[in-house]
Length: 88
Figure 1 (tube, rainbow, N blue to C red):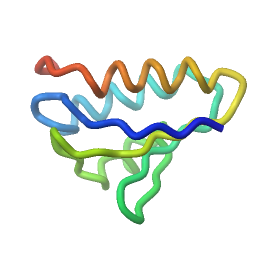
Figure 2: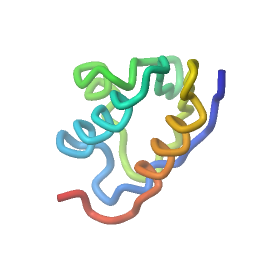
Figure 3: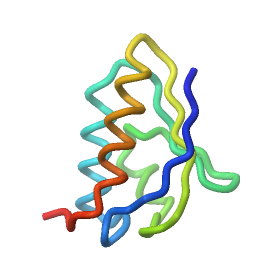
Figure 4: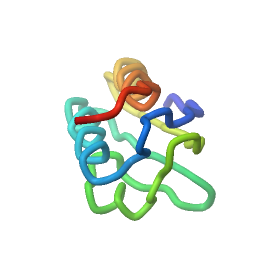
């Protein structure tokens, strides 16, 4: 299992479209992937779960992945969350 703290740098935070894109990124992997903030932990492949977090730009989360492709999953999720461009 890999756990990594990541600061969200997406300009508008994780509103509906950026959250959907994050779920798409996470869903490409076989690993179990979770996003944690405070005492909340949700499945990164669940659009409804991710929307409940209401994450904003500048917030830090812990992303964890466990499975045969966990390293690639963490790397690409970090790349996505660290992109500071506006998501169209």
